Length: 398
Image 1 (cartoon, rainbow, N blue to C red):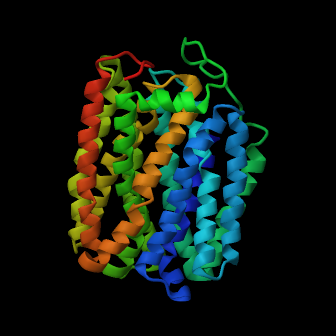
Image 2: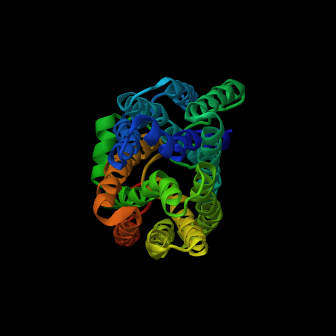
């Protein structure tokens, strides 16, 4: 059930990028304005993260998940009524506010069904919904926009999300907090106390900084690859939306399942095992980010997107599982929310506009290639986090 909700979480946010050329033509937008549409979502999604996480730790997570689904789906559908850039900017920002509740609530919930022995695999399986949703949002939004106009893309995805919420309201269940681990769970840990605990943990801070870097690169891919393929390889809207998502996301699906299995195994041998798998992911993906931006060969591009996607999946499967190794159950919603705040404000929020600005000087392909340097920075941070994690037991300030 969470997989299905997460599918629409990503399909809805991805849909707009596949109709960028239509929006650009209809409203006379330039690349910087298109980048701002991506940033608007990321800024609000990030700003709301820590507060959404704190709320999630104090209410039924089922309520937060379904409430968020209704909100972002309704906003997605309402985007079809917009006729100007300010209106698009506002709707993208509001959609970010609706979606910010989902991952803190769902990851906290999954962590109560799965302890340290299976947590990465469980989250890795859940993560596959992100990739399938991204593919569906990329392709079907492009196809619907190409055939029926860009407005119908938002109506379809938003309407289906609301319908899903109505169906799942009866069946989604709330586990007891901390039931997967033999630890005492405090009630309503104050937000300020939780933030202080996280701020005093070097491992938590390093993981947040690494997520900021990795999310920068991921948002570059989601935001700009459809338009890059449309411009350089002269693909149709539907094909550029599909090609920008299909190869990288299907490979990420395989990488996420592999990364979850690897991390659960390595975590049994060393406290920093999950972080080492993540480091392999970002270091391995960096050269293929360069190749994606620089190649003029369709075959080379497909190969680079596939390899990038696989390594991205290794990292993605352990984003929250790594953090939960150093955070107690009662604070995991807040921790996941704070992760989103840092990652989306610092990384995702800046990526669309930074690449839009750089593209004026270096072109879109060259700007995408430059994002590889941010991946390398993430790898260094993850190695430091893994080294620090070995020095203290789980759930202790690190």
